[in-house]
Image (tube, rainbow, N blue to C red; front, side, top):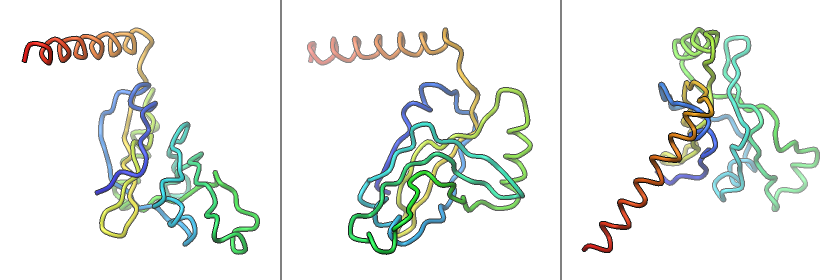
Length: 150
């Protein structure tokens, strides 16, 4: 399961409540570009419209060798997520609740398929972010001291 992209900013800005795995509808040149790692999840989110889930603002660069078939290519168009109807209904209900949103965490391959790990998340307050930084720095300091002792 090679990881193609991570959304580190989402892990910093949101508290993850639940995770889901979804397939991603892509064209042929987009698949090749994604497998080369030419994508970014920064600022992307999931919206649900007409009973379907869409990944918005995910940037996939055009595949250089397919210039003819990708003339009017838009790098950040909406991409459909493949989820079961029950999962879409559940996410729709949860996203209507106050302060909950759906964000992509990572893009990876499973066999030949490209999958997206999405999460139901709650936004962190500023003091929560400071606390996360503080604990991360403490853990780093402890790891350094343990390394020097051994």
